[in-house]
Image 1 (cartoon, rainbow, N blue to C red):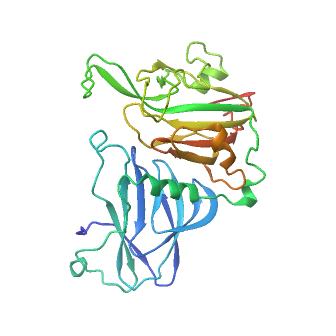
Image 2 (tube, helix red, strand yellow):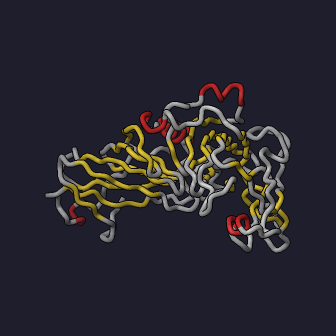
Image 3 (cartoon, rainbow, N blue to C red):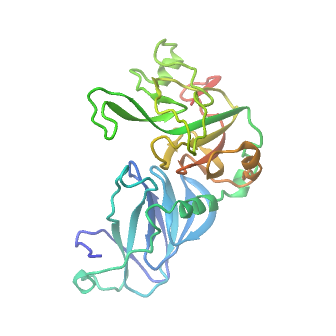
Length: 332
């Protein structure tokens, strides 16, 4: 890998430990992040402390952040800090960037002349579609028990099941191949969100009618084998719907990826509302089989989750952030 003279350089001193704050600012893709020849210790995820977890590669979904510790414990020299794409979807359906982005970790005292070291080695990244690696990383993260043990909802008042995937809707002028005349849209429970002309909170607090409907479904409108072969629903309802939650209610939310068109990791963010990731897995969520394996002691507390391709993620949270005014309900 040839290094350009414009590559960012971060100087370190042998024997010292440094805090790196990583943000995945990509729009579509998860990223593998690593420093050649070094380990990284995750101590924070989405601005919440975690139990220290040491890995050579860190995984970040779009919008996720992590604070990691890097100890400069290798021979004085230059090492690549790099990020590469994780994309489990078929590349023919979802092309992805194949060239890693790089910076340089340069030890104090190392040569600054890149012409003397024109080629540096990348970290040892997993394959671009290694879903097992990503799942193992995600499931290894733990919150600090002293912070989480008394706050993780052990029961829930609301039990929501949201399917997450794609839909195809009519669009006469669209040329999306291989479905001309159709538009590819995101879909949750067979509903595709339509931008309102007015802020949802503003419409709610000032009782402005016609901005949204408060009947977002708690379960899919069309039930099927979400991750297997068989009938699927490729269409969605175009609407501005919200789910109203009682203030301080305990909520369980299962996010289920679907086989509509193709599997893909989907980053989900709850704006202004952190959640505990109490479980995740592949296939279709089975309440009887999967719930007993939930981590209700020290799960990570985050604001963004990457729903596994062909799998599910289970979240729990307390609906305690209604917005700018005191209210008896929260909008999800």
